[in-house]
Amino acid sequence: MYPDFICIGAQKAGTTWLHHNLRQHPQIWLPPVKELHYLDHKPPSLYKRLFGKPAHLREARLHLKKTLISFPACASLDDLRWALRYSLGRRNDRWYASLFPKLDGRLTGEVCPGYARMTEAQVCELHTKMPDARIIYLLRNPVDRAWSTTVMHFNKPKYGGIEKADDEQILAHVADQRTQRHSDYLSNLAAWEHSYGDNFYVGFFDELQLDPVSFLRGVLDFLGVNSGAGMIPEGVDRKVNKGTVETVPARFRPLLWDLYGEQIAGLHEKYRKAYTEKWLKAGPDGA
Image 1 (cartoon, rainbow, N blue to C red):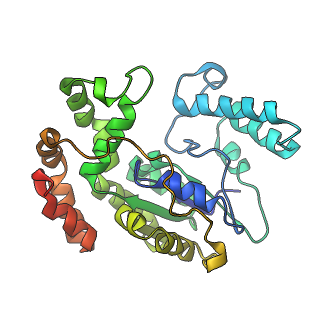
Image 2: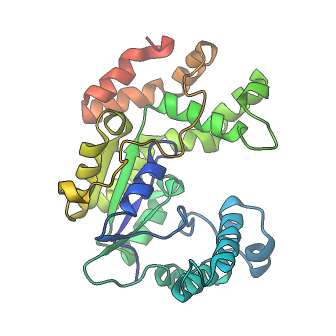
């Protein structure tokens, strides 16, 4: 069966935190691996599933390896079957649906920030298959989000950290169209709200930072599951997958503002939130 809900992003806006905490809810089932990347990638060949370099394919193989190593002491036969299907199975709609078990009294879902960038045509096609799915979209100041993902990019082993990158490399990544699409919230919102407007939830990263309990309750209420005190996991205020060097250096803020200033103005016009007003007032100086 297809998932009951999907969190589509945004990247570096709290999706790992959300996946971690939703997995602990007794009325929710999430895959053991975050970001399946089925809906936003072309189906890979068997060779690519076995040897492909894309991160989501390497993660699938790594998950299978870990499951095999821990079987049967820690991983069950069902865990092993799931890992084999996930890593080696032929990608198609039947495969994707098979990853989400039918469980009485429990919702199934997926968290995958890449999905926010799907085109309106892709979302419309998805809606024909999953018309009742609920969609969650977490928004973060586009300037801060773009910098956070840039730091994450240069923290890969081949780069050795943002501190070792020169300004030309950093500016090239910031200006990259793929980086910008993650922060093009207005286009992403338009594509998804066109099909899922009645089942669409927008949360703000600022609220997560300020009051994670209230933030999680808002998501649980949207999903229609128990949001009482006993359903909030311990350590909900603990940061998950926190980046480093999160503050945008002053020399990069004007460029980032040129890229996203109009986006922020449009978001404030749409939502009129204290958070969007704060983003707007910060301006190119980050004041």
